[in-house]
Image 1 (spheres, rainbow, N blue to C red):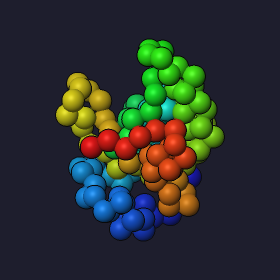
Image 2 (image 1 turned 120 degrees about the vertical axis):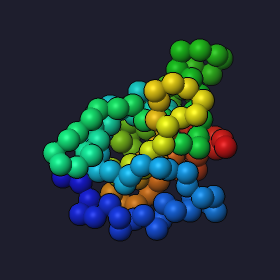
Image 3 (image 1 turned 45 degrees about the vertical axis):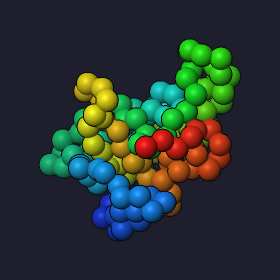
Image 4 (image 1 turned 90 degrees about the vertical axis):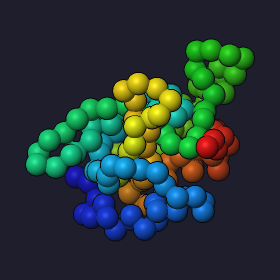
Length: 133
């Protein structure tokens, strides 16, 4: 069960810290299947007409430390655990998406909790990720 009306928080997402959101698709109700790392999540996205797709979404506008490369692996693990705390399996969210212009077949998205908070912004505010353009 998702939000009664995903459009009710649309105005909130139109501006994220004064920046125009660049989502071309959504809003969609979705359910968290699992957190992949500190800035990627696997969602069951409800497209309408009883059509659901499972897709990995990279949180737009943020970058968390990597899990398996670099010198900050522990920070990457901490970021993943924090995101798992924000998005437990089965959490209902709303997502707006766009194709990632930097990679093939990947989507970036703005994921919003039932209380209206943007997950990417929380990760930055809690210092588990940094904001990127």
